[in-house]
Length: 136
Image 1 (cartoon, rainbow, N blue to C red):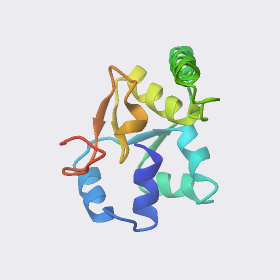
Image 2: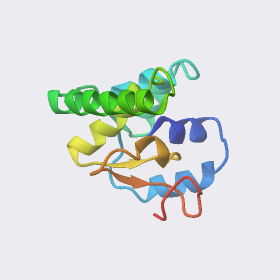
Image 3: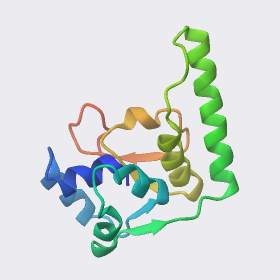
């Protein structure tokens, strides 16, 4: 699950009810450690909230995940350089989240599928009718 889903639920942002409905339909929900780090500037109690809501946190990112992150970040930097777009934006957290899900065979629930467009084997879940999402 991506951090944008958690923030929308925690702070009752747009689509919170629809997001909760999708979550209720999932048998197991897991996030990786970088999600907790990404949430911390806005939510000091994110880890506790995740645990209290039965959401597992995988703190271990193995070598295949880090290698996939390095590959994607390198490709991103090359695209930026080729396009004259300057230095690549810092997308390592998005790559960590996506690689964790992809390498472990998890689906990723997100509100922004664009962040994960370079993952060839990653299955995304998002809200129906969401222009940024897929029809799940």
